[in-house]
Length: 164
Image 1 (cartoon, rainbow, N blue to C red):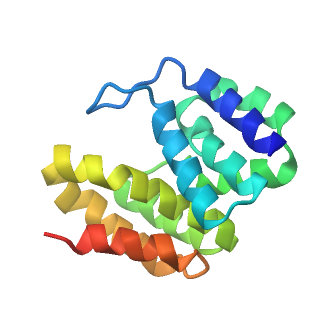
Image 2: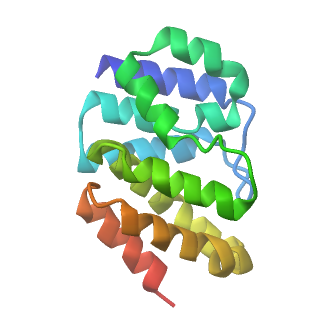
């Protein structure tokens, strides 16, 4: 679990000044939740480490050089697959995300499902318009292409997406 512990420490440092929009909680609590979900469904050290690091490139570009210097190629490749770095309007960016992740290994797809599973309840509670117009349909479309993901978190997320 050395990779996972190193990734947790790295992610907590990188996101130290970032807080959740709706709750004001430290952002790293989201990362810990995603890592915990991934551990429950996958358990590999590389997957747990990647779960901790999945938002570093999107949210903390200043940490990119350290990320590349610190972690192995498989973890870096997975973080890159999970990072929405494309340009364009929302529709174009989400299409690029679906395309990129549809080709990702199953363990990387599972991390993305766990990320969505972690985000869904707060978005559903605090951003009802965004939930209905963006998050819910985009998450459902993404699930349609994540065929290699572990189906246990997929079912949990579908239950949330389908609930009134």
